[in-house]
Length: 314
Ligand code: ZN
Image 1 (cartoon, helix red, strand yellow):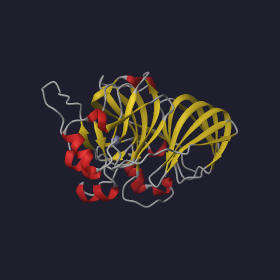
Image 2 (image 1 turned 120 degrees about the vertical axis):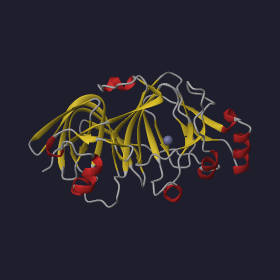
Image 3 (image 1 turned 60 degrees about the horizontal axis):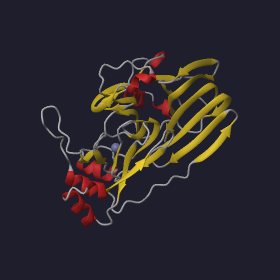
Image 4 (image 1 turned 90 degrees about the vertical axis):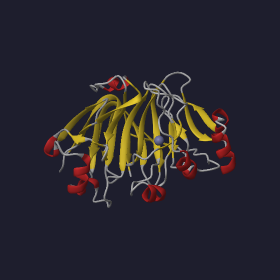
């Protein structure tokens, strides 16, 4: 029987970042900390096991050397990346390629389909989610004429909202939003618009207009999700999405429940409260800010406590 594996995240400084990640108990070194890479096995960041016999190994190393933890799945690279983002400013408007395009144009990278769970946000906070152009010509003309308000689809958000952002969707996280993002393991972003912002040296950030236009889905289709609710003893399970790239659920725990491992593995991010996971005679305490992997051989386990977790797998 293996152990529950807790991970030490990697933090990223971003010009739009802030200090809200401290609310998870993290020590951050900059007041522009934008991203917490909770489960990361990418060349730009690797989270590290902090307990048990695998202590010190990166998620990427575990995937390579201990594939049984993940149910012996295929693949050269670990498929998922989980982040918490603190948008203290608007993020640039961007779009990501799909697998096929990224493989050809970005050196064998994965494409990037992602999804967002809104942990917290300011009142009237907004995201950009899709666009209003009917044809590629219309899209290009609006970009050229800088008719951004006409082109971009704005949506108001509130805590608990969930958004599915497939590759090809124009999107941006707005100021004042704290989200948990589950995505394909990719760092490929095409920037379409950056509000003409300049940094302290008067420089603007690079745009990728040609690639953005090439990969954007036009017209954009809506991604209304059929969210499902289920109650297992004292656990409310909300299934937000099951797609070829990932599945994402929320656990709302208020008491005690027993679960069976129905996925090759689980990535669990504790976003509120605390509790324990009990399996094979071992009790593992967890609390807000923890990120743990439930390995494949955790066939049955109990959860006890009061906590909210975002749980992802394939
Ligand atoms: Zn994105």
